[in-house]
Length: 395
Image (cartoon, rainbow, N blue to C red; front, side, top):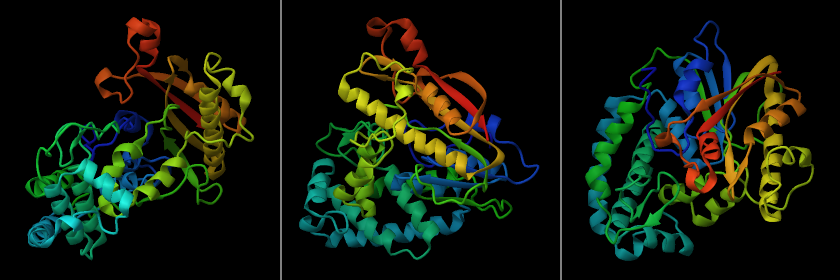
């Protein structure tokens, strides 16, 4: 299982499990491991497999759902029985749903327009029917598994139940007049995929606790000095806009576009005019001299946000605790920006001691952000953009 762990749902720029197997120790004593920007939950799942308690926070509701499903002890037999019932109920509901009602539950006008753009009428009716039926489930774990399976039909690279492509990479663009397949045709197989990849199905022996909640890494709801190990992968400086693709799924889970816009605006690296106490000396050392004033402001905001993350990570760690940050460097308007140096500088400023810095090559087909072509930017830059940096701190 260690070398074959698979996620239950697509997610861009996922933490590489190979780093975690090398970093997270096997159980000698059970540790409490925190990922304050947990994404799809790779750190948390590996920590639990290793027998450690894990805590995760993320601002993306879909990331929290995926992490909780991936890390839950689930009963495969119960789920497969329930999905048959849900699908049968949804097919009956589908026949009664009128075109004017073929929208997400409680959708406002903006969300309805968004749904019309990305989903054809037939699939809107089927998604509405499935969402009603899933909402009627009492068992929260089973409900989450089925929501995750439904989302998998939408968050795809090529063929899904929407009219778009490349949604799983958060670069959605509309290409179809009619969706490649319908939710009813693929829902059962999607549930089976989720349960197959769930590492803790039918497992009563693993007593390690895994908890994932909505939360902000810049202001963690955790007491001082209670975490043994922080392991996380911050967003790229030119951050992946997860919400751009995820909102196609989240509207069917009950989120209106206005709510998702608000969440997106608060994400780390979002462009805002809140630059007080930014560590400006970092910017001069990471390659931003050639950037426009507007793009420099983006860099300053990122530094400001990551300073808060490092400060919080230091606060919650126990004395002698360790923190590992897996950092991808970035290009901003063609300029190579050393995000990793930002993290190292801010870590030391907030009290950490740097134990090690090592580079890890990324296979080109595993990157989310493709490196710039050597023809336009030079072979050296393209090579550097195929690396990520693993920084280990001690408190």
